[in-house]
Length: 486
Ligand SMILES: Cc1cc2nc3c(=O)[nH]c(=O)nc-3n(C[C@H](O)[C@H](O)[C@H](O)COP(=O)(O)OP(=O)(O)OC[C@H]3O[C@@H](n4cnc5c(N)ncnc54)[C@H](O)[C@@H]3O)c2cc1C
Image 1: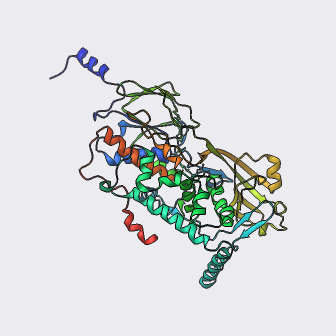
Image 2: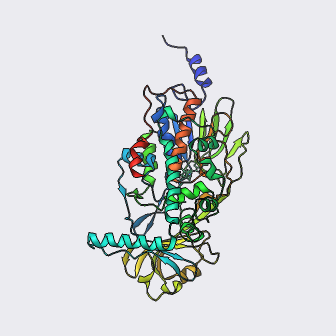
Image 3: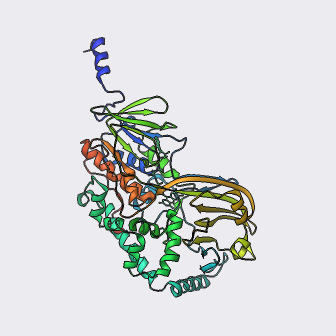
């Protein structure tokens, strides 16, 4: 039986714009980084009520990935933002496996030098040439460990224990649904795993309590926090522990660029991607949200997920939302093809400069770290320099004796960590407006983005009462499989 045309039109007009046919309507995600893309992925995996047209992802830039991006120097691609993945980052590992992305490792034989502004106070041994025998390699590793032990003693073991304890607690977030609740707040989420306490005090205070000596903290630990978060050991303890885990062995990256994780997840979720479409405002309209984009378009969404830090992003919320102020730590990543100036480091030959220069917390040192990304010849390399402020031309001319190419990126990189951390709500308005990146106040990393996204996906499904599959998809390989790594 056909319906009279005017009634059909009236019914169509009464339907909120953009609503899909599954009854749930559009779910909109703002941001296509690892947080937004993994939210999309988990949403499609955890409920049977979504199909492509109902899941919209908005990205203001021309490319997906956000802080996962590559930079091209002389035709070679290098990670410019998030680069290393810990072997126990199970969500990201599962994503890479599912998407058929290949992993690459750099090997663990970095030549680290710790620079205090005048000299290298400590250096590991320079790497052995390729083709060195197995026995010499083993001896080399042993001597390196002994050198580290001689300088830092038992603090090394205590630091390792501190990191392993954090990791063990973090692994609880991979538990099955039966033994893992859905969390309404970051505080609840961290208290459940026993990690909340670490966000209340500085890393330095935590490590002193764990028995580390001050030399280890001011040298080795400082080098790591400056490389990974551009900040000192005054960062909060959980961000610090995550940062220290980033110096362990077995780290990997996606061959061809980590941004492919975001691209692959969005495709797997069959999400409708709105590239170069920034969301300017989010307005609550009774039973749905109206998202207005910079293209002058409007979208009606039954639920909206904000998957970008709101600290330096201008989205107008109506009614206004209130979240605690959070400072952003900017990291300037400067990519240079050229050659370092040995004289800047008080050395006579460039071959004496360590492959990875880490720095102590000395105000006069203008950079946080310098690492070699590619060696073309003894006099021609590509370097990545991290600094807290922009490095001007004359400073770069002092640090480098020759430069063929220089590329600068100013990242709004991660929160400026200050213990005790305060967290914005996950549910921003008490309704259907969710915020993934509140979890970044605990620690910013690809995996923490995915863990926070998974919780938001579960929370949204539960609060919208979306149907679950008869057997919920396993969130990740059971963490008990990983015990052997401990
Ligand atoms: C230099 C650097 C090094 C790092 N190193 C590591 C590392 O080695 N390992 C690791 O695990 N992590 C690392 N991180 C951290 C990691 O990259 C981030 O935690 C993670 O990528 C954040 O992902 P996200 O999706 O939460 O946010 P983002 O990647 O920032 O994504 C947010 C997206 O939202 C978009 N957006 C913003 N506003 C709007 C709007 N109004 N409308 C539409 N779109 C919008 C942005 O363009 C962006 O694409 C590093 C970060 C930096 C900067």
